[in-house]
Amino acid sequence: MSQSYISLALRQRVAEIARYRCGYCLTSQITIGIPLHIEHIVPLVSGGETVFENLWLACPSCNGYKGIRTHAIDPETNQEVPLFNPRIQKWKEHFAWSNDGVEILGLTPVGRATVLALKLNNEYIVPSRRVWVAVKLHPPTD
Image 1 (tube, rainbow, N blue to C red):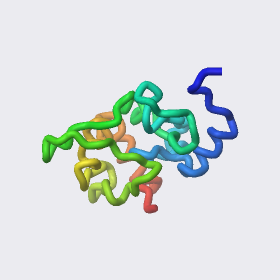
Image 2: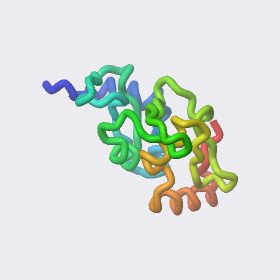
Image 3: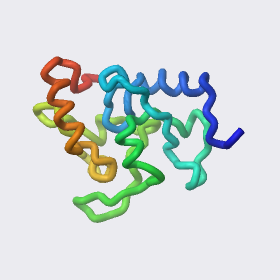
Image 4: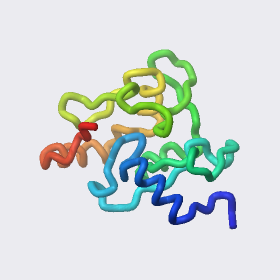
């Protein structure tokens, strides 16, 4: 078995604690209708392990843009900062929703860098969020 094998029980445990939504953009698995990915917060290539404490849920878009990244540049300070860690950091301390609920705003260096690096407001997700807002499925209130 490879180091990246994740048992069904472990997948279920991670999904439950993540409340079946992406740790970065908060997109719900039910809203997008496809399974979210189990992602390594610290990638295997960077020494991360396939253990509960290093795993979280990510939508395919966020997981794809994150790839093996652990850091990005804050556009305001031009400093390299760690990406947001949904396992140990609180989303509301680093991000907020725009008034119309369709864009994610970075509030801190970590938040701003993560918004840009993971393209949290990309041209595909923003129109979807507009629809979700119209049918009152978005933004999450908790």
